[in-house]
Length: 215
Image (cartoon, rainbow, N blue to C red; front, top):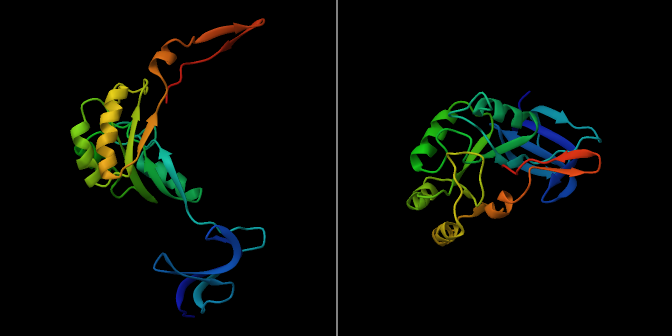
């Protein structure tokens, strides 16, 4: 039987505009095209009726994901990361700029990321780029190429290919990014304080072991 939509989801509990309400969701061509009060949409080819214990939520965005492809797909590549996201209701991942080879600190590296992702993604994917010593001239072109923002470390990142910046280098990057309207995520831990932190210390009869913060 035909209908106005490919699919209508009937939900007595749906989160819309930050509040829970009874809603009907109309979907055509894989996209939400209508949201109406429960029962307020025309018939559809397929109808899913959610029970009262189910809550229909918008797709979630995970803005901090390390997809290690290219370079280390055995750690986690685009196919595995995006399948896992889809299974958990996450519809967008934003990939961090380290842990792949090359790290995403130039437009060439961003192109390599996108090439690795092509045809392998089951959800939407965006990219953070990195601020490292020596790539100040790349920031504007990376922004123009579509990265969603930038990330830097003031202490050891744990990756030799993603070295930390000094406070002065961070400030120069901020002066560029301010003009672009682009955010900068900063791991602002002090390298000096981290170097002075003991890795093993004693309390009472046993040892409490700590490891230097890495990422």
